[in-house]
Amino acid sequence: MKRLLVFMLVVVTLVGCGRGSTKSDLPVRIGQSKTDVRQILGSPSRTGEDFDSFFDHGLVVDYGPSNEVVSITATHLRSGVTFRRSIFGVSIGDPVAKCIELWGNSEKWEETPFEYSRVTFRHKGYYINLEVWSKDGTDASFGTYRSGTIKRVKLSKDNNS
Image (cartoon, rainbow, N blue to C red; front, side, top):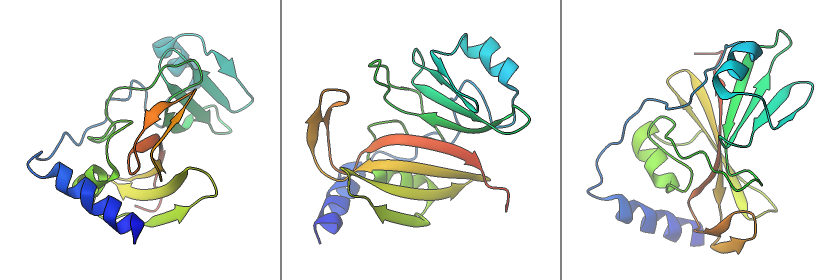
């Protein structure tokens, strides 16, 4: 019931906002090589066997076995930087209701034991996996956040479409 009330409040907030852009403003794309990503974003702040974190951009890029981009995560990193551009019309901090307005209903909504839910959408040949705040709060790393707003966006290819 509480989730329904939060959802309704968010939808009412969006009335009159209109449709946002449905393009992605990510500086890199799925399928690009690790070399290309590093040429575009610079040296990674942190790297692992299959990922690079770019603290100056608020992005984490995951690579497949051939060193090609398989997913891109836009988030708020511990460095304090948040990815501020839009991904298919939504940005970190936007209400999840905006996603529903732009992309239709979610495929999956999973509650977690943490202060966020995991929500999955399919749009334009991609899986868009969100972390959505499930309550209002304040955190040293994230600052103040509102229930029903986007915490993190992870984009990957939908190979079934």
